[in-house]
Amino acid sequence: MKRRFQTNIRIATIFALASILLAVSHTSFAAAQTANTLKVSPIRSDIQILPGTSKTVQITVSNLTGSSIIVHPSVNDFVSGDERGTPALILDENKFAPSHSLKRFISPLANVTIPVGQAKTLDVVVSVPANAQAGGYFGAVRFAPADSDTGGQVNLSPSVASLILLTVPGDIIQKLNLTEFNIQQRGTTGSSFPTPDAITAKVRFENKGNVQVGPFGRVSVKNGDKIVYETDFNNKDQRDMVLPDSARVWDIELKNIGTFGHYTVLSTFTYGDKNETIEATQSFWVVPPFLIVGAIIALVVLLGLIFLTIMLIRKSRKRRHMPRARRR
Image 1: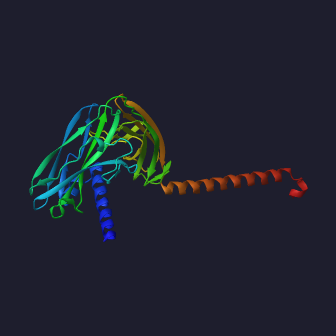
Image 2: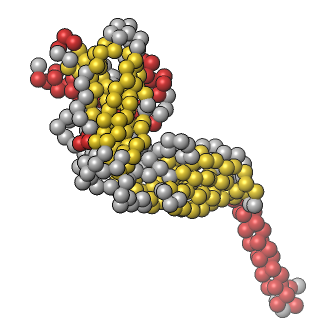
Image 3: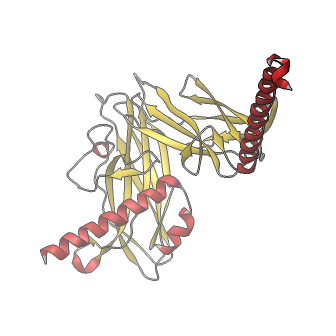
């Protein structure tokens, strides 16, 4: 029985982490929600609260099932789980994030009953203490179906979550370091590639500040003096963030690359309230295999001709310096 209980806890944890990943990435989120029993909106809220004040965040939960459902809301801190933006959710109700904990600012939420096909909006009050340090705080308000037969305990159905990213004004430190900028093809870094497809610029930022920061910018690809491709990076209303004390990686697809040539990638990244700028440049070649083979063959032939010419010259010199009698 104990083993079965531990297995159920593991399953619930996996479901919770999966739902948070969907909320952060925004990838196919609408399609995934229709397969769940609940739908939540907004997926993420970015708020700012002064120390000693409060703000209410409204979150709407929709019932996608065919019957009335009891929903259990819970507040969880999270930390950076990997460098692709996947958070690691802290599911233990008695634990908090070691720093940047939003859970400490939110009171527990009561269960709510949602009729079939309807939605209810919950008021989540975030209260920042007067002595709170300036910086970033983040957490997730997670919703899962509760089982009325077991006194409202959360069952094993998938949960959905709404993320809250809070900024407390004051002595804010916004500091991003660009620690990696290279060109890759299918995950392999290089300066020369055999084909122009699946070439990306890998960008890695480290956040050395005390608040979440969303870098954005412009990436251009030049062939000689001609710009062959330009694209925006993370330039949207709700930007992907780099959490404090963590790093994040992006892969920027490079298009309009020809089958042969030398290319230069020029990038300008901006972040923070003061619009700090980081510039980076990287170059690469696209050289098809048949050109490499042709070049090797041409080099071998050229070296052979040079060797043959040298031998003929040496032979001619020897004949010229031979005594006339021996030449006869």
